[in-house]
Amino acid sequence: MVAVICHLWYIIRMEFERLLEIVGDEPVFETGLLLAGAVSPANVRRQLSRWVKAGRLFQLRRGLYVLAPPFQKVRPHTFLLANRLKPSSYVSLQSALAFYSLIPEAVPLTTSVTTARPARWQTALGSYLFRHITHELFFGYGRAEVSPDQWAFVAWPEKALLDLVYLQPGGDSPHYLQELRLQNLERLDLDRLQQVAVKASKPKLQRAAQAIVELARAEATEYEEL
Image (cartoon, rainbow, N blue to C red; front, side):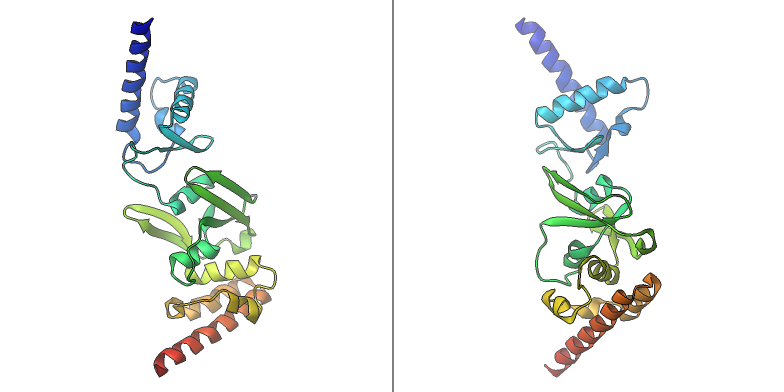
């Protein structure tokens, strides 16, 4: 009996070493990566489930996994994980604003926008919130290097601000914009900010864009006077 158990343990260990050969350099991977060739999808999924229970893998959602320490060679960035959790999304709102150092606070919750249903995931690697926007507003983002050799879709700083204004009741009010404690506004492209607001065809966003332009000019004046 002991010999049988040892033999099974040896097989499982060797199979896990094979997994490390395949995905060891990937910060996150999907089940499909393991299904090439003459393999049984059911067996692959059962083995992945065993490794999750053994603490060797983290499962983020169905079919999406991350190696657990100490097997993890590359720690995945939360923005990359957000993109992979819901592919039809980009990181925006407070998370993007903190990424660009436009607000002073660190943001523990990674927030994205999507044209799909809103959702929230609590995982071993953090919390992820996805808020719904219309198809007409799903623009103004690009690929950004969020960690060495890790890229994610992130809103432009100007679009992240306007996404937040759009989703926040009263988000265009001077009081709310002051509450954000915006900083480093010289990093904003004010022309692009106004162009995004015009393209969105939302009076609320156009009012907010004008208010933010005034805040940026006031900040620049204060800096010049120092």
